[in-house]
Image (cartoon, rainbow, N blue to C red; front, side, top):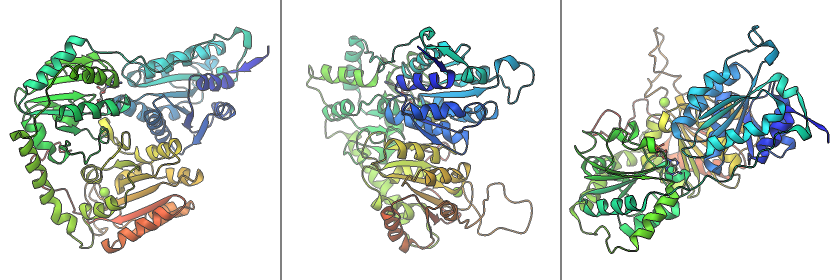
Length: 551
Ligand code: ADP
Ligand code: MG
């Protein structure tokens, strides 16, 4: 038997553990890992900033159900990628970051890009380790893969010093490792399953909240069966959207604030009572609201509000337990309750309150008017990436999701800059599906140079920039006075020309009457397109009942 070098063994180990995609930027000392990965049949996507590469890797992980890889250079490369690790950790998404490192024999000497990478990665990771022997690479990759995927998913980090990448090992001395299978699907205690159903039966104003934990668990069939069988009103979290179609008659998404505030019992399915859910506390929730919590992570149970019933286990497995237990019961939530009627009225009121903005054809456009045409045009099977402040929040209410894992956004960490990396991942993993991004102009700017990546790989995605010339809002024109308002960006900036610079198609739309035709032309174009839509610098959301933390 021959020898193998560290780069080739890393690539082979990742492939054996089921990694299909690697997003990254090459340079010292990781060039050879990228080419070895390609030889192993891993798709390597070379990006322009490590942040975007690590965002792409986690989105690909979420979309495929297996941790995918990100490859970055030592020191600053690893530090840039930490933005992605933190985002993945907050979203409970897996990914494997492989960072190059300065050679071990120069440790402490002030080597080129020397950094304490493992120590710095640790707070953002479930597992972080430096590889110190070439022959043990498969062992560490197996540990990393298993840690990332099993239990509550999360990011992991492997540190690859230059001398390990270039070092060799005899094939017969390599420590072998078994491929990590799909995560075990743990079940909840049967008594707790019964207790959950009994609690739901006893509620007057029950509400189900479906979160992205269920989407990660691929529990869409079980969740649909549960909701259809119990006829319970449900609300989806931003990325739980699409587990059931948003236009399902049992969805109370259009009456979100009212549903959360008035429910007497909330059943959290793979969703957390963090800031997105207003912590489960008054005034956004009723005082003393009862909580049933389904989560894979026992430590999560009781966060901010004590749980009356805890269903600790995998979402798909526990939802099927609930469905099986329902076979022994006659109960379902009746059609004609005051609660249901109140929710329907509230949803209708909310629709009325935005209708005038939807119908408003003045120039420059408001967000709702822009979304009117976008929604009309949007294909049902599109994967939607939303990013920005108003752009994302209004988009979430206006753009329907009809299938699971068809929405990616700033997520639990509220990260700006994720959009283009997420779109690159979606287009790479699902080349057969339409990929549509809607970003604010500020959000676009964080990772705008990834348009070059998108054009280089000919990813035919369609990006709409809702351009209000600022962060939150802009002003009509660039003033001569200084200082400039911190929130302003260049009014009327031609972001579509950035797309054109790399060979994609760009459109600039000011008149709402032209928007639909432009969207159609962009979709018909066989390649990437950016549609830059001018929005009124002071356009906003509909008046909110609560002005803080409104999502
Ligand atoms: P959302 O933003 O949609 O509310 P969160 O990220 O806040 O979602 O919460 C998702 C929850 O799902 C986390 O607490 C996580 O532990 C949980 N989770 C992750 N994987 C699974 C799984 N396979 N089964 C059940 N719950 C899961
Ligand atoms: Mg803006």
